[in-house]
Length: 293
Image 1 (cartoon, rainbow, N blue to C red):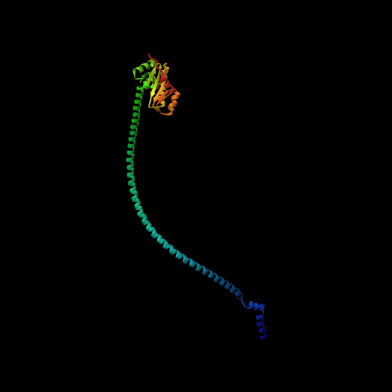
Image 2: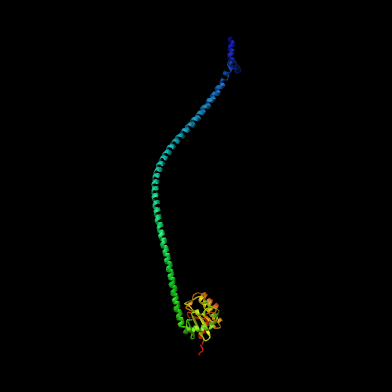
């Protein structure tokens, strides 16, 4: 018996297969799987420990982050407090500015009303000034025209008085003179039976009528001879020409009003005595000898 026990112990110590078989026979299924479960539990504990460690690290990091956030929140709240104070001050300044702006707007309205009243007064004064200026311009224009007319009449009278010298002899004068009217009546009477002659064509309205024997000149006189003076001389001479007279139109003045007036005289074959210059036809008439009766 002792020998069997010792052999049993020896096999249990030396033979793993025997030892496993004895364990299977002696231990329950739960006890047999206990080492594996302990190993699994140990492994789970290690994993939990590692997870706990990681969680602790994460918690530590979160704590640091929370601490930083708390500090940031504190600084933010301080900044907000400062901004709130600044905003309060700005609100007060804005309120004061609003009051000032309202006062300025009211003052501006009063100023605009005053400006509107002044503008109305100025507009009225401008209108009065405009009418006064227009009236003054009309007066100045009238005075200028009147002065020109008087000067022109003076010059015309002077030419008529000097006609014997200007034409170097001959007869004539203003159509108002009886001798001139008599000469023109003889020529124009046939036209009057048909009606009145248009003013632009009527020799009775010329400034001067002069003749040497049968040669007649119809003269328009002006300080500045323009194209209308040339046209009247030509048309009034043409009337006498249609009546059968030997006639030429003449303009006398100090100067040409425009170059076009000179061109018009050439075109219409009107002779001239302008300033000290004479046309060829005027010069020929001037040197013409008058037959003595």
